[in-house]
Image (cartoon, rainbow, N blue to C red; front, side):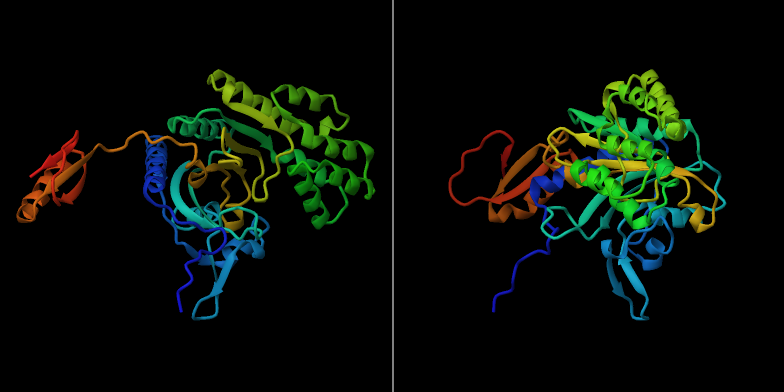
Length: 376
């Protein structure tokens, strides 16, 4: 009986040029983050289930790959890197001077809906700035996010900014179940306007709040959107978040990066540990966001250390179709007869030390020598 050569849904093999692209993207991003003072961290692929599920900022159990160890404890393939970093910050880095700048390149694993076309294994390259709970901290990380995408030579990218305080300030004053709040948030995030209107009409809610929630999916674009929010009856409840975004945009303008930034007031990430500014990066030619991040000031506190933080992660796998290789090695073809095999090995090593990629080819009949081809 033949072995079935299928892959699990959401998985894929990478070969040849796809591997080269991925490794080059990693090298460029890691170098950019390193020279900005972010130190590498590596955490285990396997973590205890409780790390991701025992606090309000955790993941739902159905979103994680779970199994038991030989002692009966539940383990997971990590679905996220920020939570393990929060664990490390609260233990091994507890006494380190703040701020702490951390970077990582790691695979994460998430269970996605069947036939949804999403990968279940994703390589994230990201940073976390720990213990700098200021506008300057947010600007530093947004600045690095923009310049990381610029370093890859990507064309037509945008960083969308939002603020979790906008939706949480409204939800905190609405007496409905957490499940219903989550459903409303999903409809706003996915801009499913008809369903959103129907569900809002079915609940008892102050009219100004109802109208604001209906408008949220439409509040995206340039900074003019902030002026639109100021004209709404409910503005006083979201004033702090809007003014914070205005201050961020002012800093971004002074950095001459305004062209790379837009706003989305209806951005509500599925990951629920964000508390302040949130961001997503989109690249022309990619049908989903390639970067996600934001401020999370309660997550590390849940591990026992009172630190706020902000970070972002870039989905390296999503960039393969739009990234153009920049540093491809020149290839030399080295032909040799059987009696010169050892000499060919020595010559090949000499060429590789000089920076060439070498292919060893045994001579089999007559050959025509072209550019970058050598015969021994």
